[in-house]
Length: 107
Image (cartoon, rainbow, N blue to C red):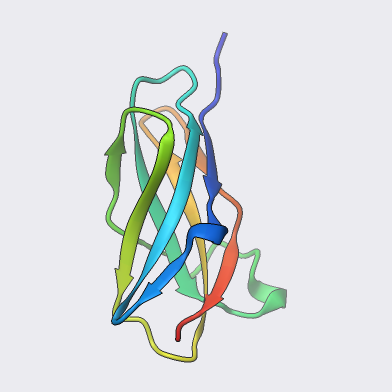
């Protein structure tokens, strides 16, 4: 039987550093797969009415994942005072799973 992958956007582990933000995700399960790619989608928050639309996302550099655990990625070049929306994305040739969407304001 097919077992799906599971990824959660770990908002409680978001860290702002000088010049960048570290986004974090928990890969809870790879399911029926031995590996997958983990990336983050990021965009300027378009407001509540447009936040569920699938437009304007930028996919950050992906990393190969071969085991459950916490993984992070640095987002650079963000504008101070701007609200951003982001989510973790775990994918391979057969499946794509997205974590919950979260917001942060770049300090």
